[in-house]
Image (cartoon, rainbow, N blue to C red):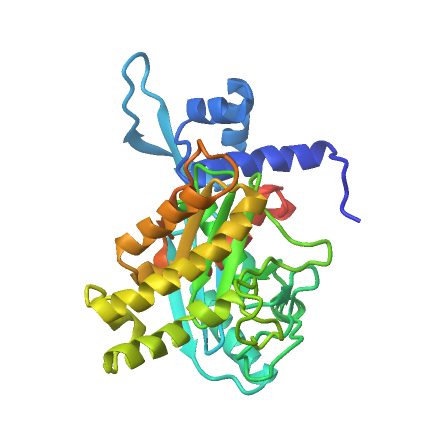
Length: 388
């Protein structure tokens, strides 16, 4: 059972993590900013900052902060000696890793592209990439893992993704913890993506948001009241298998009319080739959407997506919709159409407009989100050794 009480040490780590998050994500840059944002007194903030400077988590910058009146406050920045995090993204035919600092700057990045045949092949690629990140000899606080789903977040298991070459029930978190000894945090790739957007990207000013990514599959990440949602069984949300036509085609999941059937990128690319007679890639078709047949196929895709979004929005009443992966190559008019139709047809909060945007980190949201999983653990005070 998750503990509910908070002792003195918990409170200290919570305050330190909050201060670190506000500084790392650019929300604050001085002691005065931190005091206002946290509600903590100026002496308390000064003590926290002083202790974190002593632990090489922060440092004072020579750069001055402009101030209209009074003494110019000293700028506080993340120390280059602060711990780093590793992020690993496991996809259907690739695996990528990054080493990031607390400002989410990428210090090292590598990728392996391969059609995995076995769990052992997959994990060997993951190990290779983590080993490469560790060659930089930086102090690493945690490793974050993002994976295609479905996943069991509580158990750290990749369950049984479609189109994953039969690989299933991979205890990825346990395997990496045992091999490297670092704290390991694991989640669905799109739940990691929405975390990255919430902390550093286009979702920074929102407490409730829905992120939907389209590629070979269709996935989502959901934040409600500032927290990612998971079931009590540890499963992340899925939107790709929301039915938009109960009389539609049979999906690989066994249901009929799933959204994923109608908007996944391989299916749309196939329809575009049939409609135009042109042998182009998805991205190349997005460069010629002014052609009538291309536009017709894409408008159908956009409207199918909007149908599923409405079902979710009417349940969540979210503040923001973010579209990622292959949606990032869509012309802006398709994004605008989704926003227009969602706001025209949604049931509640008619007076509040829901913006629809592409992800800030574009196609990197999932990978950087993996790193953010480790960073978020720091910000939540869940890595006591960092603040000891």
